[in-house]
Length: 430
Image (cartoon, rainbow, N blue to C red; front, side):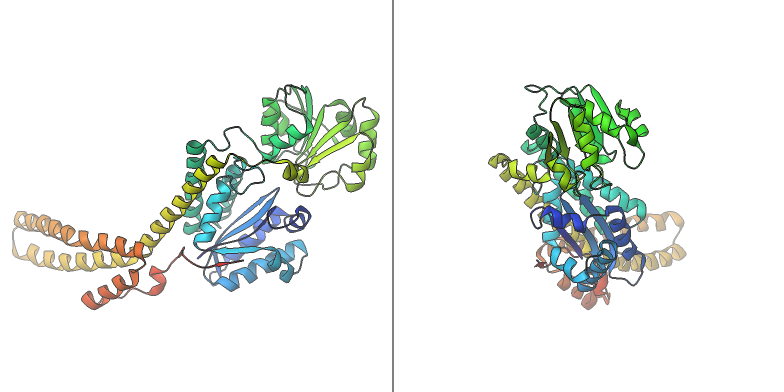
């Protein structure tokens, strides 16, 4: 079964979410380990961890065991008790899980409705799962379908056409609009995927001089790709003193911008220092926010300031998502009867081969070849209607009757596990 265990800015305070998603790489590895056991409850897994959500998509064979296993792995990584984690995560199973991923991928569940960054984050999460060998066929199909639906939403509704994102909204709040308040220089702290988004947004707003500092020591490589100047730890205060805005978006070093560092940076300035802190676990330590001359815009600021996107575009996007869920369910329902259709074709083909062997022994090769072509045409014609009926019955949920008919008419036995693999219609638990 397909399911998702998740929490986002809709469900938890960002401080709670921070506790849960403090170590995204370790979380992905720990959840992925569950797929390595042949008799385990999890066959596939993808972990999506962003600045405002943690979601774990599973291809599971046992519902409760899968939840308990994931909660146990998260407890080991985070230090939070498994019971508390279970209370923090919302569980969706089957069609609701499919609907949720399509909604998230389309930007409809984001802090900034219609933002396109989440689609890229989801694509990266899938690639990482594929590289780690944790993406099962059902997981692959689900995520690829979500990508297609997200692309359809973007092209057909215009939602997100304005390029609004968490980064762009935060820059707007801070006054970095590239017009009324031109910004010539900026310092980015971080070199990950989100830092690349920030760099592109700053360039689009006219920033000419870009500096980058990496807590993990990757500033040189990032600077080379983005025409930026790397900043070493010893020069961080001086760099902050000389730029128009600082954007902190690293996944590491929470609280690194402390009172001594910011006091030194502000002392070298004639204007207030705007810091955009987009990390889930903030870089600006709480006491440092009180340093005179420091102005912080964070995820809470973005959450409070975002206006809803245009209603018509949102409604149109929701319609596309609903249709996408229905299409995925239909496809998976049809695939559940694939073993039955294959078994029927093999049964008929086996009977035909036996007859052909008899004919080849009795008639000349050219005559036997003509008979083989004729038998093949008849076989295809006979199998055409049963194949279509299998698809129709799968759509209406009557596949069990089809399987029973094969047993009654031809003695073909299909095990339930073969036709029930990866069901997508199930209940939702919250």
